[in-house]
Length: 338
Image 1 (cartoon, one colour):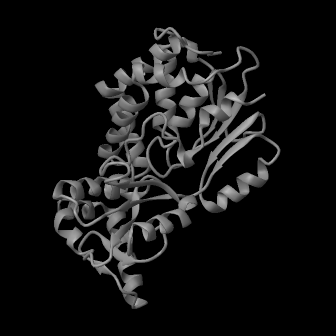
Image 2 (cartoon, helix red, strand yellow):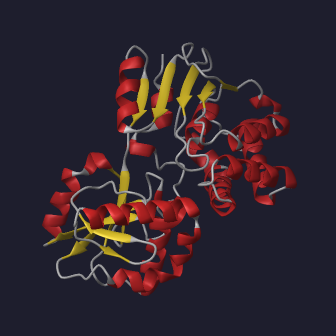
């Protein structure tokens, strides 16, 4: 098992780095798998799969970044564990970071894939095993996780309650639904609002790091956002997104719920953090202290915050190795297993 990798040429680091190089070359067999994944799940467009794969290769599989990251942790040289991973399927390869943590902690992953995302990950694991045999038999795809010594599971609020009960006797990290928010102060440039569009529309807004709500200063006209975000109007050509947009518009109209809408995005005033597909909520704040209070009250519903004083606009879907989901340090959890 890995314990304080002082040699940056350690086989696991080199193997993972080579996997990153493989991804960035986009060979024909990887392109074939992306096409297969899109056929099985039309939310996984080729463009979005490429964006995710590039993000993984550049942010998670960079040799120097991996070396610096893993050396902040210590692991026992004995007694490797079987770590059960229940993967979500809302966006492509959303559980890759968890798997990476299991690999680098020297444990074995028992992976239950989501039916929505069952193509790319097994292919990448197979390629990694070919590149670096040290990873052979370190990933087992399974339907049941009874043999797991610990669990990391991600799902909806309902499934999280089930996971909490079912895995109550095992060490676990259970993640439920979260969403991300953006804070505007009214002085944003067009470039910053354009970048905010990436936080809203990338992966069709289906990720926990996608912005589903805006906090706006009192007096801000939310419809001004439409002018700059018009560059993203092509998203309405995606059949599934457009169907959701039309349905959600219809529900709001039938219920006479106040809202704004253009041809591709609904803006609705609401205190709720989570929003429907093609919808972004907004809420006004009176002052910095009022904003702080609002954010603090909803901290357990918020994955990350975008804004001038927070994560830069356009960067919500570019997490680093230390940007742990729900702010729970996965490697620390794995290092403390007995």
